[in-house]
Image (tube, rainbow, N blue to C red; front, side):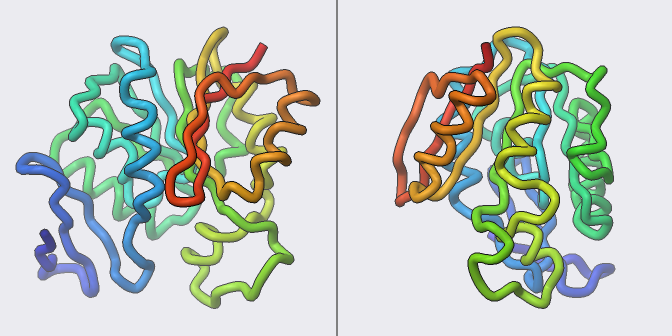
Length: 208
């Protein structure tokens, strides 16, 4: 269900439940079902009172959907490098007084390695930069195509930020499954749980 925000052009509220909603700009496109599926896949695999980080949070759909699913985490850092999206998601959080969520306008690769988390979430850009025509809209381009955050750099940085036995939850197009498995051998991680849904692989990764 959507409700237009009168003070912000092209913005709408999308209600996820009777209690929680996200703000979206239609020009940037709606959140994808992949994020919802990733939350459903991960929700029963988290420890109690977990400290979490969402990589490229966008509209904040993953932090909010976890709450809707009844996951009561201790804290969530939602990292977003696009300033417009970060500001919009911060308003989503502030308007609902969700003190457990902190929205940070920053490139994920710049997050301090001194920070440690129980689990990371990522619905990353799906396509290598040279694999198709790039959208003119910068938000859509960053959401769909790898730039500085390639799959390899994402996996390397995630290792730095996880506590021992911490987990990375990630979704990727099924065509990149073998690539992910190759990185598992070179970066020392196991895919401990796996599910294929709508041609997208949902993975739980633990480093060793």
